[in-house]
Picture 1 (cartoon, helix red, strand yellow):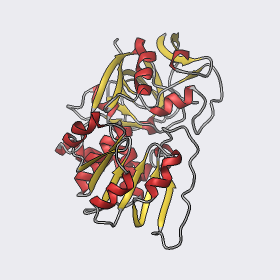
Picture 2 (cartoon, rainbow, N blue to C red; picture 1 turned 90 degrees about the vertical axis):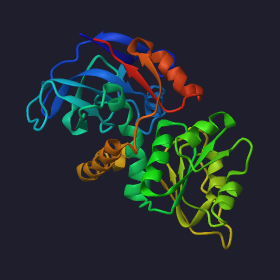
Picture 3 (cartoon, rainbow, N blue to C red; picture 1 turned 90 degrees about the horizontal axis):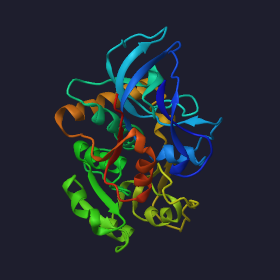
Length: 333
């Protein structure tokens, strides 16, 4: 038996329970891992409340798509991985099929990356979702280049901080947007070229001032909702506004068009549907992120650690809006 987080009804963090569940044996193309650390993501909160882009198909349901651990059993038709190997689990499967909020978990081998020597379990669980999301949208799809400007809201999230590091590595200029001034200095320390406090400043006006009236080549928006119309004013002609999150919880209007306004590209981005399920793109992304980890340009920013037994508190902390970086849950054996 293995301690496993499941929910039997939809709702807030309190619906999650830590239960003893038999993990079973891995099938073809699967491995069973002894989980050491789990990366906590907004997608899991949306899934347990049945508000995710993918509906929950059955109850009780499991949670979790990102973690790190050691392989303890290998199923048939698995090549390139072996028992005892340290690995990271990527968000490359449906939570209807697998979940890593557990002491032991079965996962598809297609969602695994070897964990290099020197990368501990907490780092291995915290780094991939943020950097793959930022890389996938801004570089793989968007083609961000040296000299470009990218505006990042929810900048103190794991993805926002990864995007700051990513922009600096490719020679672009990251402009962070945060709701209050409380996190301004820390964002500057993480490499933001400018920080805009949205509760006190006109975001689009500041972006235009920073860019000499040109606007930003990219806006990387985790909030969506009515604020999209204002962010659209900050995009340079031919630039792209990426929507990769829905933190506002409000309907997102398509910006109205005025005669003579700059050309604007606007698209959604979901890492699990555009990158981690494509072996070729994932291989390229993993190589890019691994290179940044090796030379120190990339590193996970961990906000706080919680033990598995405090998974409810971990989700409450995520939803409080006070975090700076990634929340990681550790699993003792």
